Amino acid sequence: GDSVTQMEGPVTLSEEAFLTINCTYTATGYPSLFWYVQYPGEGLQLLLKATKADDKGSNKGFEATYRKETTSFHLEKGSVQVSDSAVYFCALNNRGAQKLVFGQGTRLTINP
Amino acid sequence: SAVISQKPSRDICQRGTSLTIQCQVDSQVTMMFWYRQQPGQSLTLIATANQGSEATYESGFVIDKFPISRPNLTFSTLTVSNMSPEDSSIYLCSVDSPDRANYGYTFGSGTRLTVV
Image (cartoon, rainbow over all chains, first blue to last red; front, top):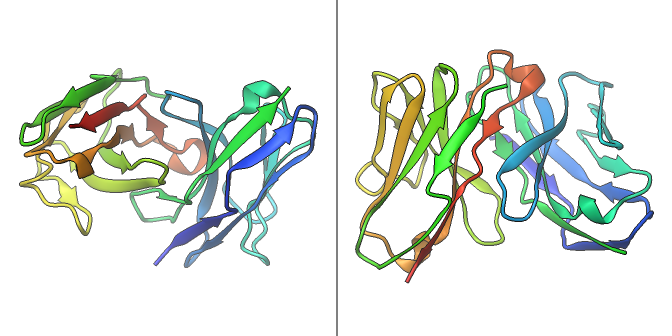
């Protein structure tokens, strides 16, 4: 079945550091890919998405590119802030399926 | 996108009791989803609720333990029955978007349940 694998956490960085959180997926067909963010004590918010190969999703300085050849959707940000501290989830939705399939989540902590 | 109001936001319950979680959406939606997020874990889909039909449960989840109601297109409840400490989790409801591929799903703020 469909699955998503994220890099192990937790990840701790200093402010203004470069961030990469790896995400790879296994799916039949051509899924849509998402990154969700969960701030402490809150629900999930959609951060960015991509619906087809080579699409780049971007929001709040975060970017991720849909790479079909490597089945990846790595999340990047050039300069992180303390306010970026949260748990990040990579997810996919396969066309025709009703549900989201989530990766295990990566906890990110940014120190001032 | 839809706005979801979920309550309670948190609760501490005695083992053996039941808790009903409510999810109210500000627009009519076809499908509503209930997820469980165990401590330090990812989200696992419990069931999908369509208005006017029985909920569809994922493997490992049963109606007797997690009964769901969906009386109309804007509201759903999830009950966690006969609770044990293993049920301590965050429970989230989610709704579909008319343009799912582009807008994904919207999530409620979650119910943080602790069973003692």
